[in-house]
Image (tube, rainbow, N blue to C red):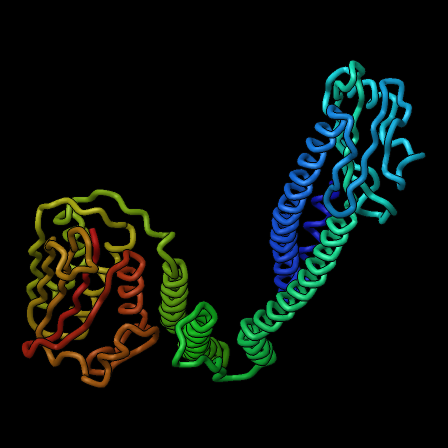
Length: 465
């Protein structure tokens, strides 16, 4: 692992508040360093320009005095001078530097050849005494070449820069501490609702019921929206848990009945010797209950498989062929009961999963034949979108019958698993037929509804196709 990767890994293991404060501190450090550097550079440039102008003016006046063989003129505060011959001997100088060489041999040679030499003596940091800035240039005087060295002390300039550095460092540290403190308090305040949500989730994990997070109603920020999302998730989890408990209870009841009947038939058969006819009757009764168990198990498995849209594979199919294939197995039953079973389906092509839609239509037709009277009508047509949200063509499939219709109190839960109306409507079956129809419609991205029409009942499927 590289060093940078290791640093990123350690940074990622820090708490969120620590990472935010550290990020703020690093960012502020860079901003403050850049700002301090800019301020220092501008002040240093201004001081150096003033020092350079004073030193250049002083050197020019020295040059004129040397050419005229006159006394050196007074210079700015802290000014010094030396007049050297080309071999480095001091011909005239200020008392402070009379015996102190200001130029090295190389610098003397460069100045003697006509170049202007500029140099600083001493450093800003660490502090050194008697810091100077000098300029040296060759001057022709009395037929001889002379090297005039003009210098000024840098003490005031260096002291001002050192004071500026100290003030910038102090101000930067204070600003960094303040920014880190504000960042810490802000991060803690921003994440406090998240901590409350975490505690609430931990309480839910410990088995608490009907838990909802306390989300402010007068805000609309990211944390508040997260709270609303979590509350909606808790609503769905609670509803799912209720459905699961109801499903387990209903399934247990539904499975208990055929199993109890099987046990009773077998107990009667084993109680005393039976004739072949009696055993045959018992076996037929057992076969019927076993088939009921198989049908119930298959219906439950189909509903579980239809839990998501991933199991729906759409393919083009002619609508009339699909509906006629779903209705065909029930024509004999309708004819035996003397009832009409009519189909009115458009000849258009739709994209649906016929593997699931065909048995869903069959379930609706079977329910209508078993629990209603009179003719059964199956209509299917393709319409345009009826709402702004519904895009593309829609398949509307209706199975209508004549009879007493659904009990009003049953309609809100008509598509629930194991939901049954009164015996006049659903005297047989497991109560999974309409639940299967609803699951097929939902898996297709559509909807199913049941309603009473005054002449009977009808179930409507509305699917995108």
